[in-house]
View 1 (cartoon, helix red, strand yellow):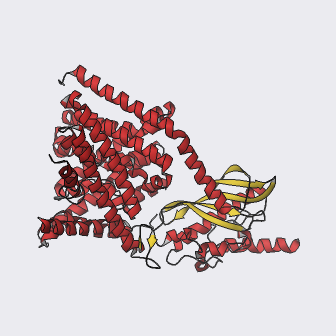
View 2: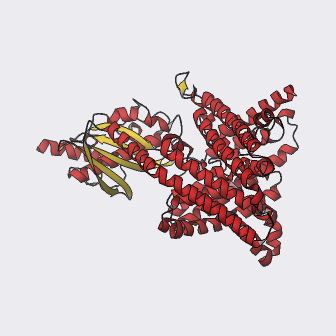
View 3: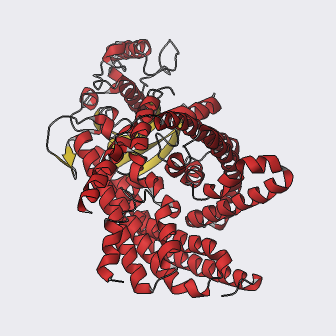
Length: 221
Length: 195
Length: 190
């Protein structure tokens, strides 16, 4: 076709219209499946960290400027556990997100890694089954633990050669625990309850004060 | 032209990755495993075939001065369609390929084949060229991915054949450059022998 | 502090070419000489910064209000292509000397996936306007840095006796691999 201005505008306009219509049509078709895929992803993560449940109620919180979502899972009206979508910004390659499942009495049931950019083969082992990080938390209440890796004087076994990732993991789990405690009104594992008010969850000293604090509380009971 | 020759040319003689060295970004970025490489190759091939067909159909009505923008619109539309379909039906793969799905738009292979082949040839030949070039690209990506996965994670297509870790550097960024560099050497040697 | 983090991360830790593999084509193609690589680097800095501004405004004042975010890819690539043309025309009129230095690189930038990649990433990372521009600018600086270093290495390589089958792109890729290894030393910095 000739290179007249009218021709160019007509052809480009026509192609763009057809292209836009085609894309719009496919978008309409895929809208529902995409939403379903996102939903299925979340449900799978929830199911992976919680015991059997029939309903969840989400609640959005913000801790240390990081958005955290607490899902309260119920079975026939009884609370069977909490799943907390948590994050940390202290990872080796920036932010990563975890889903942490708690029993109603605050014990860690399971942890799933939702999204991360940690080094393959080192930091990304935090997602493997039976890794020392998760093993340190499994079945324990973070509020009764010294929340730091062993290198920093805490109770958590770090991943080999991935101390920064391990510290960040502890930070994320601590944040999940605190978010859940904020929901249920229990004592926190962080500086919020303690006398020494340093905000660093990974520092052994802070966590130590907290755990002694809680031991005292336990004694009182 | 012989139909089979069109397909074969894209795979060996004009292999987009090893010979023409086009589309380097996705080749390096998405080949952390054989499956990812194959997925990226397949997505690119789909766009390539569709855009080749459409462009050879409409080549007659496009004024020559606006042909590049017109091609880009066609390619971008197909890329978006592929992206939406992958999000809907292959969410895992679409997540691991990430930003490189929309970036198929600027993959020089596609615009290159549109301009260099589809704009001059009939519909059937253009489709075959899309298949050939797409297969060549997919082959290169899967091979690079497989080598990196083998060396880097000690696995192939996700099945581990040694316990423990591989040489991590091959899964990381530098490994991509190194593996592709040496594969290119091997490919050049092999094709030189055949000739 | 936040901006310092964005800048350091974009230039060194997540270097656009060596860690994210965006813009590898010009990285391999325009790195034979230090002087041309500087021209290319400057042109990318220029275009990427302007593109980030335009793309940001387009995303949040046109695409989101209309509810057509899924048209992102088409709209962005067309806008970037048009923008490059406009920059070329304006530069020719306003500053012929700058045009002489950058002119030949401008058309190449449309198909530089780093520009479109950064545009998509800054939307994905949900940066605000100032963060977006900072991110784009420092990413481009990272690109220019990697390109100039790489060109310096290749100039030296020209004088070496490289085995025949390694000559050209293979040795360039292997060099880039070693450079990427060096850049990995920056990880963990932020």
